[in-house]
Length: 102
Image (cartoon, rainbow, N blue to C red):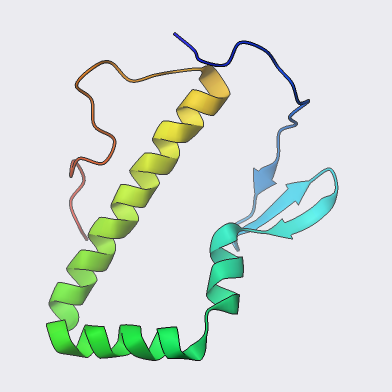
């Protein structure tokens, strides 16, 4: 089943390079992650460093890995819908912890 009933926009395929840059018909564009990392205020970086020290490196790494894995799963889930109109069967949960932190 798909919720997309018409193609309003002529989407074109784009490719991503290893350095988080997308090759688009309009030229090379940085990824959202790159933009957010580059524009993050210094106070946010200091706050994250403080949090990392407070919880300890091992715990902070585990939390960060779990969050990154969750984001990857959600991205793949949404991309599957956008590209293929694929909706997961009832009961599936794209944010469930089905990947191990490494």
